[in-house]
Amino acid sequence: MITIAGTQYSLTDPPILIAGGIALALILVLLLTLRAAAASARMAQPMLRQMEWMTNRVQSLSEGQERLSGGLHHVSEAAAVSQSSMLKLMEQRLADVQRQMTEALHGTSTRTARSLGELQQRLETIDRAQANIEKLSGNVLSLQDILSNKQTRGAFGEIQLHDIVLKALPSDSFTMQATLSNGRRADCLIHLPNPPGPIVIDAKFPLEAYESLRRADSAALLAEAQRNLRTAVRTHIRAIAEKYIIEGETADGALMFLPSEAVYAELHANFPDVVREGFAAKVWIVSPTTCMATLNTMRAVLKDARMREQAGAIRKELALLYADVERLGTRVDNLDRHFGQAQRDVEEIKISTEKATKRARRLDNFDFEELAPSDAPLLGPRAAE
Image 1 (cartoon, rainbow, N blue to C red):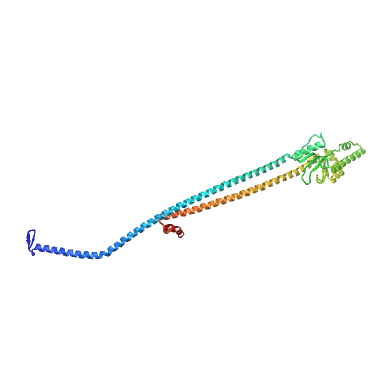
Image 2: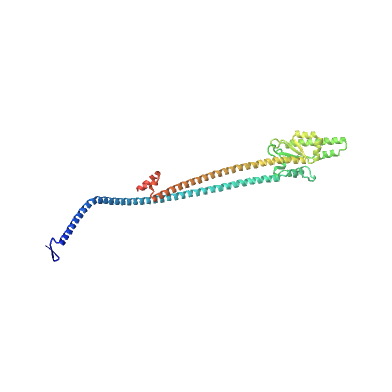
């Protein structure tokens, strides 16, 4: 009998049997549960060990990630320091290049200005020489001015000779009443260059003999007058040849100036033997007209000599000018080489800047696999740090 809550029950009673069956069932379920739990525990142990291994692996990966993050941060800091150093170096190099270019440009500009100043001086010298040539040409009368000289024939001899020479030649190309080494005084000495050298012009006018020739009204008087005129002219020729032709001092000839075209025409028309004697003695007879023509020829000789002198000065200045221009060209070439070197330095700086920029961009993006093999040595020491 079993007493439950004050009520007695028998073991054979249905409630007792049911309760016992339930209790037995519960016990069986508990036993089965315990057995299943034991089996599950035996099966879960490998899984737990795997989970523990995975947990340890995850922790290791986390620690590796932390170390990798620290390394990348160190690499980033090293890259920033390297980039800052490179930028400072680039700025210093650019400053040096700019300073060198400034000094080179300043020196070149100074030398160029000095060369241009010297060139301007040479050109001014050439202009002055050209002005002298123009002045010389202006001082010499033209052939028309010479041929239009129709002055009143109130003066003969030296006065007319002086007037013709003064109008035909520059004032510094002749000397009136020049004294020679033999003490003789020449009416006019033309300073011609060698050859032929200085030449004397002596004025002679056989007025009495010519007038007697013009007044002769008979054959006897005409023959006498012709003889007197021939004698007078020959005497003048000999006197000029003896007095005014000095070897080594004057030209090997002289001029006898007749201030009358009529006397000159008379000699050439009726006294050719006298003219030939003058040629033989190297004394050439000239009239006012032929004297002008002769002086015009002398003027051309003097002008040519003066122009040769000026041409020598011009050639000298042109040689100096050529040297200045050549020196200027050399300095321009030096300046061009400086600019070329500066341009090459800038190009190299640009290349270095592009490489540094690409390297920084790759480091920032963790693109280590994209680094070229040639870049590895540069990155290796930085990564090792």
